[in-house]
Image (cartoon, rainbow, N blue to C red; front, side):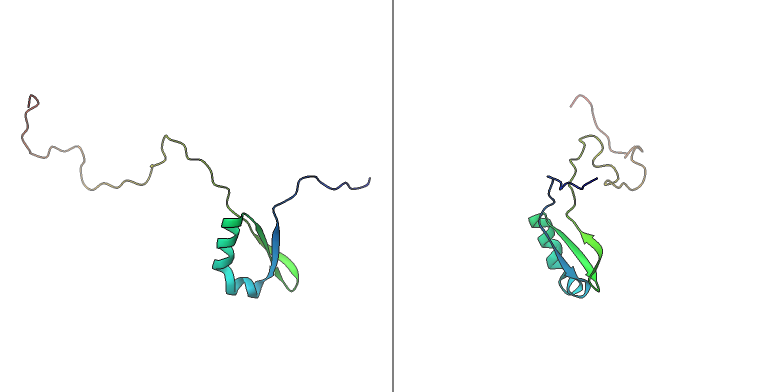
Length: 87
């Protein structure tokens, strides 16, 4: 069976040797994020890793702050402060 070329193309990318990747890592990360491209990292000319942009997911409205609030002590204990509900 003959292979057919796919009509789906990946975003334009580039290849970089591991040594250059190490020297320019932060710059490459910014470029991948901003341009939404893929960088293949090679070692001795062979691909060993791929740096790709993260697909951002939409946050759910319910529960998105879970784990972000900290409290100290008893949050239901009376404070001792007097108040009048009719005021």
